[in-house]
Length: 165
Image (cartoon, rainbow, N blue to C red):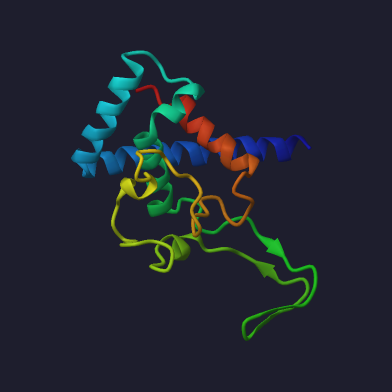
């Protein structure tokens, strides 16, 4: 049990650190995005550290984080699953016991789900009213799981908590 808990903390901390690193890299490459994000942070936070309550008031910041997760696909091969019975998917047979991996990078760059999938565009996460829209078909930053997955929420909360603007 100790090793399992340690693995969860190390994996979560590493993924969060990698995500923050990628966010900084994207902001360096896209200075207009950086300025827009900085303006939102300055306007909402007014020099103080962010809280979890601020997340809903930082839609562009959330959009940048999600677009980095989509574009970079840091966890490109998600959690392994095992078929519990023989399964037929289109013309393929997945035998019982087969190990199945999701490959997020191919989904995150699939034009069936994303307009201009190879373009870094945080605005794709903002609706016409200026609100952040988290639920998107074809967005699997941590592998195939429920969109309200606890691991996803913990990771995203960790990014917000670690970001000391």
